[in-house]
Length: 525
Image (tube, rainbow, N blue to C red):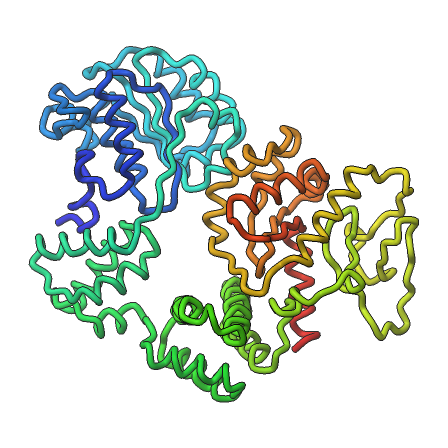
C-alpha cells in the first residue's frame, strides 16, 4: 500500500492545491497549443513543483484534453503517471549531475519521440548540476528540437546560472497557507475515515511550515501511532510541541528576570526528550502572537523584539554547538540580564552621529569604544579608525586618499548614516530570510545591480538581524564586488521599497562573522 502522499498526489491541474496563477498560465498555454520549450519551477520543498511538472507533461501528450486540463485516463496520461512512458524522461540532478549525463541527453534528444508526439524532460533539483553540465545543457535550451520540452524544478533558484534562467519561463511556487494545508488534511481524513480534531490538524499544518508533503507525512505518522484517532494531545506528544502553559511560564520568567527558573524549565524540556529546536520554534511562534497584541505597549514591544532576535540567533547555532542546550541558555541569560550582544532596538533609535564611524570600504557601522587601554589606534587620511592587531588581516582598513572618494560615494554614505539614525523603535521585520532568498533574482533586477556584481550577489545568503539584512559570502572576491556604492545603495533602496521599512543592508564574510559573534557572546556573557 502506497503512502498517503503518493496516494493523494495531484494527477490533474484540478487536484493541485493553491498555486492558482501558475496553474492558470500553464493551462492557457496547453489550451492555446503554444507551450514554451523550457519552464523553470522554483519554490520551497513540498509546494507541488514536480507534481505540476508531471501534470504538464501529461498535457503535452494527452489525446483527450479538456479546457487545458489533461484527462488523466488516456494511455499517455496513465503511462506518464506510472513512469513507464519512454518519451517522458525524469532526471534527478542530485544523483545525475555530471556532464556525461547531460551529453547523453543531448545525443538522444535529437531523435523523434517513440510513442508520443512530444518528448519531455523533467529535471528535478536542477541547481545540483555541475558548471560543465549547465554549459552542456545551455546549447540545447537555446535551440531545442521542435518535439523536445524541458521542465526544470529547483528549491534554490539563486544557484542557477543567469543564462539558464533567461531561457526558461519561470514560475515561483509559494508556500501553502495554514487554511490550505488544513483544508487538504481534512479532505484526506474524510477519505481515509480518520477521526481528527481541527485544532490537531492546525498543529500539524504549522509544523509543516508551508509544505504539503510534510503535512501529509506527519498526518500519516500520527494516524499510525494513534490508530486513526488524532487529537490535540496526541499531536503535541508525537511532535514534541510545547503546550501553551509552558510557553507562557517561560515568557513570564524572562519578563521577571528569573534566570534560574528559565534554565530549569529549559532543562526539563530537554530531559523529557523534546527537541530543543522544536521548542525554540514554538516559543518564536508564541512571541509572534505576543507581538501582535502588544503593538501599543512600547516597553513590552522592546523586550519582545529583543527576545525574538536572541532566540533566532540561538536556533541558528544549535546545529553547530558542541553542547546542544548552550545557545538557548546563553540567549536566556542575556535576556534576563539585559546583556544582548546586538544593540537593542531602543539603543539603535537613540544612537547619535558622534557614536558611529562609517567604515567607507566595508560600509559597516562600528560603535566607538571608550575606556581604551593598551591599544594603539591608527587614523587614516579619511578619519577611519581601527585597532592595530585587533582584527583579522583581511578586514583591516587600507589608508586611502581623500581624492579617491567621489561626491557620489560621500552622498551615499550620508544616506546610509541618515537611514541608521532614522530607524524607528516600533519597526518590525515582517519577512523571513528564506523569502528574501527566493526573491533575490527579482531584487537584483529591481536594484539594477550591474552584471559584474549580480552573480556575486546571488551567491550570498541573507540573514536578518533586527532591522538589518546581512548578506553573507564565503568569498572576499565576491564581497569586494558588492561593497561598491553603485551596488550597495540601489540595493538598499530596492529593499526599503519592497519591505516598506527603514532597513539597513550589510555584507560580510560568513566565516569571520561567526568567529566574531562567538567571541562577543563570551565577552558579554
